[in-house]
Amino acid sequence: MKLTDNFFKKVEKKTNVNKDTILSLAEKLQDENMKNESVLREVIQQISSLTGKTVSKEKEDKIVKAIVNDQVPDNIEDYMDK
Image (cartoon, rainbow, N blue to C red; front, side):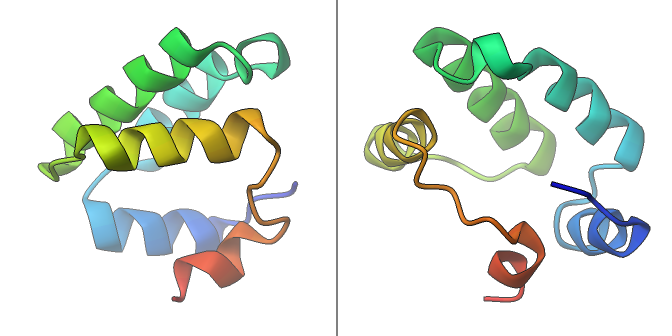
């Protein structure tokens, strides 16, 4: 998936998290870690902390399940507009 500068600008505008931080978090999620629930939960908690948004245990479980089961949308930019 190719992420454009426009994507990063949208994310930064909505979350106040800059591109460098996003890329740093993405490094943690290399292919071998995408199925590692503890790594996913750590990253979700870091994002929650960075954005000041609370993620309930139920929502965290749904996010992890979606990622582990390959249920993430192909075009994340379209998903961000929702």
